[in-house]
Image (tube, rainbow, N blue to C red; front, side, top):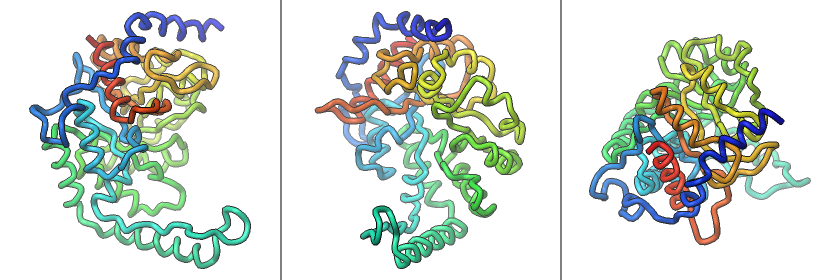
Length: 330
């Protein structure tokens, strides 16, 4: 109970202004502007030295081509993103995968014909990845940069999986480099860490391991970060609070030099739900203030996972989150 109270007290310290922030529907001038690059000035979401961004998964409820995402990001006033890899690859011309089509037999089963089509699509995609020029990715980087948005991280959730070839792994690192990204994010896996460590060191691109509620304070005490100096943490503070009912601040202090980025969300303890910023048990504002005081340079990326209210949309809700972060750092 003592640890749980620490989180609750931290939340109460910021509740004075949080309710008004969460309830606010006022959009920034970027939200009121047109498409990316057409507003009066470029976005800047570095507030008192702390870089606020968003993972573009936040806009999954809306059309999610790379060009669409850029418009949303600029409207939210954000100047950096963790870009989902599928949007980047689609922009670069990745052949479309094969859908399951009509199912045969029991629910969820695929016919032999469908399996063959899926294997063929996967083979075509692998051939494309091993031969594609990086020019399209460089063009995507320029498109975002010209609008004032830095692609600081790209999400390739399968990188380093057991059956992935070394050629495909190197392709993902080359894409990250072409996009100007500092790192790649994926789910926690010691097997992947063992394989990716030397390759990440060679490319000098970080791998950030993302946690869900399975993370404990001891997770990183083991060997997972020992396989390479470019292995790090993509720390989801909301998942940590929900899964452990503990404050994430001690872990951030301990591993701040290995954190690639934070994911910002507000969840309640005891595997509680995602809620608007300031309404849960995650000390979002206190963590941002700590980052400001300590001068830590890793970004804090909003991940919109609470239910979008009726009549709203992801751009409106992410803009509220940006406002909350800015006021917390003011």
